Image 1 (cartoon, rainbow, N blue to C red):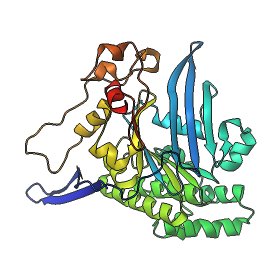
Image 2: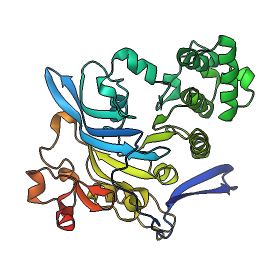
Image 3: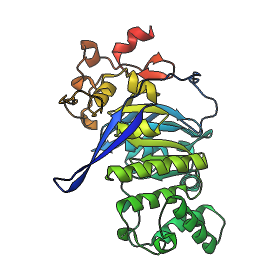
Image 4: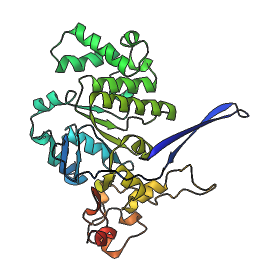
Amino acid sequence: MVSISLYMGCLFSQGFFVIVFAVYFPPRQDAKEPIGVCPVSNVLEVENLNVEFNMDGKYYHAVRDVSFYIEPGEVLGLVGESGCGKSVTSLALVRLLTKTARISGSVRYNGRDLLTLSDSQMRQIRGDEISMIFQEPMTSLNPVYKIGSQISETLLLHRNISAREAFAQSVEMLKKVGIPRPDDIMDEYPHQLSGGMRQRIMIAIAMACNPQLLIADEPTTALDVTIQAQILELMKGIGSEFGTSTLLITHDLGVVAEMCNRVAVMYAGEVVEQGKVDDIFYNPQHPYTRGLLNAIPKIDAESKSRLQPIEGNVPSITRMPRACRFAPRCVHVMDRCKVEPPPLFETDDEHVARCWLNEVKEA
């Protein structure tokens, strides 16, 4: 599996400590047993998810025909640049989008279609069976409530226990996520804690009721690499202990390499490639995926070699290309790409890519 290498060194002449973060690609080791394309008992199955926003009386697609599944105990990475629809997809799964959004498709959690449930039924599931860690803990935590109240609230809402029992379980949860002085922290406010501790609090709240599915929306954003490594290790340990399935949303391929079993790559609201993590890193089949990989530093690269950026920007939802959405930025663009949207082609076992270059391979 792809691994992360963390290198640290001191610049004594300058009087400060420098951390260098890079991704290392070890020799590939193929899986001993092939994984089936359509597992029967999936925790989450998303089929043809569409999200449209009403802007000036007209609906525009922010997410189009997104499909994926998550197995029990699995970590699925959802990656792409900012503005590709990752967070909108996650919010649509738990129905936390504004009323200007129109959602269609199927989101089946343990056989139940979440899009057909009532608001009260969704409130019973959110925070209990499905939990979410949001991007920025300082804006997610309530600044006027103490930490203890915010963790206990989840337990009191979903568990038939007393306030004393909720307090005791909250303290135990803080211990599990590595918070020092948990009894004292319960009586403090979010602004009194560091960014890393606030993120640990968010994880404690999310895992308080032992959810079956955790949605983590860029949980290490704005954290330095040492705290990021601690948070990732914490999430791996907590997920393993509780047997939780995870949808990990990030733009950091190093995080994907460390955490995920499979990866779905999103661009402009569409899944353009999906497969096992080794296949995505070692055998990418979409030009966008290759562009993302070429844009990250590698510790085994030749000295003074330049990174290869992806020219251009993610298009606005009001100005999407009518065929292949990546065509304006693609170095392999053909005339067909500009007039006919490509479907998802199966390039290997459990590996698909939305690119006309894969049509011959599938045939």
